[in-house]
Length: 443
Image (cartoon, rainbow, N blue to C red):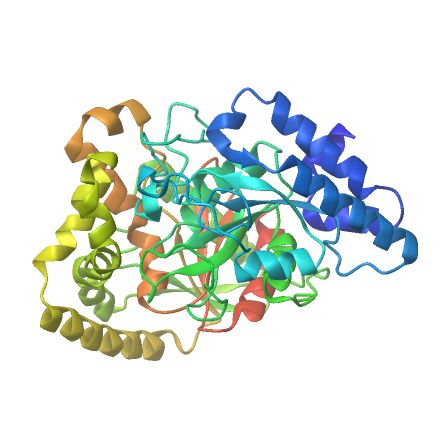
């Protein structure tokens, strides 16, 4: 049974389908692993034992009746602590929401439950999802699987840890500026950022509604596709045949994305591209000048909306917040409404320039993060180090959010060094098929 904890969600689903794995036994295996793990309280905010077992028992009955709802029917999954779950505290990593217990599930959790997935519980995250580091001294900071003295990546930090440490078969997180892809990269997982507006945000604690997206963190690209499916109440794309990279044309994004790379990150990126070339892909260096202009708009676009949504709650009890997060929210007060509107108008122009520049490519490649996971102790004590680390961690992933596209983080085989693959808006299925072929080449 311990082998189940390292299997992909797809493998577990097929084992259930074949009668080799029982959903109840599988769920008990995961719950026992969580309960016994020395770091469980840094990963899970709450473990929903009763709900998980009840859902597993229902899945077992469907197996016996030949009425399985999806390939992931009976497979245990964790949920970031910003997805409402009925009767279970949902606090978005913040004491500002302490004791907040919704009376119904978020729409995506409802969908996933209808497709048969088993909810293991809620995972820790950056405070109100406003950090790419995953460092949360107010609640808990989950561990990075490659270095427990380093940040795990955020804001879906516990989501990544739950999968990386074998305490969930898959996880559901959110991505506003990189919050699925950064922790996926730093914990050697696959992470999918969906296109803004594709998946409903009903019942999700917001940060920036114009950028908030939902996506899975998983052990494989196939798992990411299947989890996307259950979030939407569908089967998801068929990714069993990875295909090859012959005939694919990729852009290797040069400007912004490859500035000031950590040497280890730069080397991992070069090695990854070499493997893709060996597998038959054409890779062309690309600079998109409008990208630099778009990046300069980030402070007004993100902080203005975030502070606008949270001002009243924050200012009622600012002492409850981690000062670094509080300062970042409050920076949104410095921008006027006219500046915010002008920034969005400018961003739309940048998006058109991006679309024209990348039109001849199947996908755009870059490192997920230009840095390796930073040291937790120094993040706590060194303000300058915290600010610089957070901005750098988010820089490359934010490109996908600003340009309004979907994106993947794929492990390169070098610890905490992920490859970012950006697709076209609302083309997740095509991106996942490309990602499946890249995953095979990198392996």
